[in-house]
Length: 191
Image (cartoon, rainbow, N blue to C red; front, side, top):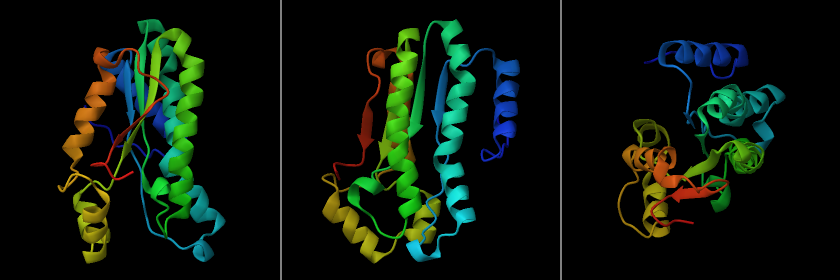
């Protein structure tokens, strides 16, 4: 089932979640995987840009998790997987607001894990390295980036969306039944 939803509009996000619930039943797994790592310099950040960047990188994750928590309680448990980033751990330049949001995801995960754990709801952060999507290759990956990846990663291979999908499937499955409040870093050994 595919729905186009503006995740920065919380009412639209909640409506989309309600539509999924109406079609598929109670939601037992949530993967919060929407972000925009638009490059920006500190001096150029306006209040509007800051608010938009926070909205697309963390705000919706909070409200999506809030919207599915009751379903998971009724199901006797569930899994919420929030996508973070290693960017703030690496102290990358020219994305300070993005890094603020992504560092915050890990704190939010821990707060939700503590509050929802008594209901057998696991909450974890999937923390990717530099995933080679078409967008990343088109807009951001240059020779300096390729060198940084080669120097930073222990495994000399491209990190692909499929690597993250497999990790998300693990965190969604019963195989991770006692894993919560954790960060699963999938970055080829960079951090």
